[in-house]
Image (cartoon, rainbow over all chains, first blue to last red; front, side, top):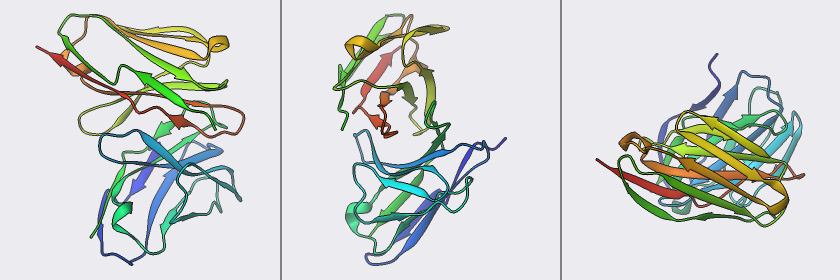
Length: 111
Length: 108
């Protein structure tokens, strides 16, 4: 049982480049979400989804897009990366919502 | 939206000491969790506790939902307890909001 899997674990981008952070879960969870964590701070909710085809904004959604075409996957897209998006990104899933389970994080640096 | 306040922000303990961490919510939550973020950045689930009391070894947690707060107790602390402790809650909107954490350092 893999749980919540995030890829890549590390990524370096230049300003203006685009990329997708992948998140997959194998627990058949309806609820999935993305957070960012900046140094010395808590986790801030970017976007979340309560099921396939349903997404909504969190606390800090600007600059990020999401979609949920399957129950298992919830990718996070950065269309034009900015240095302010340098952060550690965490994906989480749960049963609507119930107990959250996190992936190991993806460290993104934007130069 | 829900606001989550954690206290204290920082805590330094000698090994073997006990501590209490607090989490206050600005509104009612249906889901409440405590996490430990270890020095490698991993988020470890400690308790899912929307109400009542739970215990797991040296750790226990109590949530008083009617008064919108939760407490995490750490007894006989060990150096491996060091890290950041977060609480998070979600109400009817399914938005799980985190507090800013309590940074714990346990000295040998």
